[in-house]
Amino acid sequence: MLLIQELFEGYEVLIVLDSVKMSGEPGKIYVLKVENTDIGVEEHIAPGVAELHELNPQRVFIIARALGVLPKDIYIIGCEPESYDYIALELSPSVKKALPRAREALLNLLNNICF
Image (cartoon, rainbow, N blue to C red; front, side, top):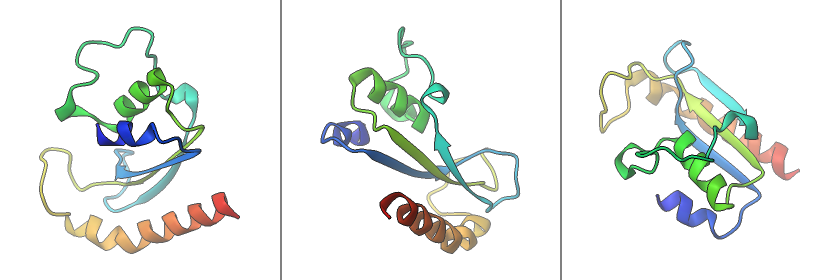
């Protein structure tokens, strides 16, 4: 929910770093541009969409768009996890190994956006 509160400050671009399930190899890095049509529909925000313990990027985007604070440009830098079966406090070995590639993807994206 802090992200939604922060978006009230007004931003042109939002970059989210998260795990993504794309059926690739664990540790694979993806740079995805989120189109407005990919976000979902907020006309009837379903019960539970704002459940604080279950906020994922899509739900945040839906709520932020409904509140009128969603930036125009949204990107996700995602890493394919080893598993979605459980939540751990530490990164898996393949995700740890992917951190330099994720950092490089972020720097490249920032360079493309800013220059």
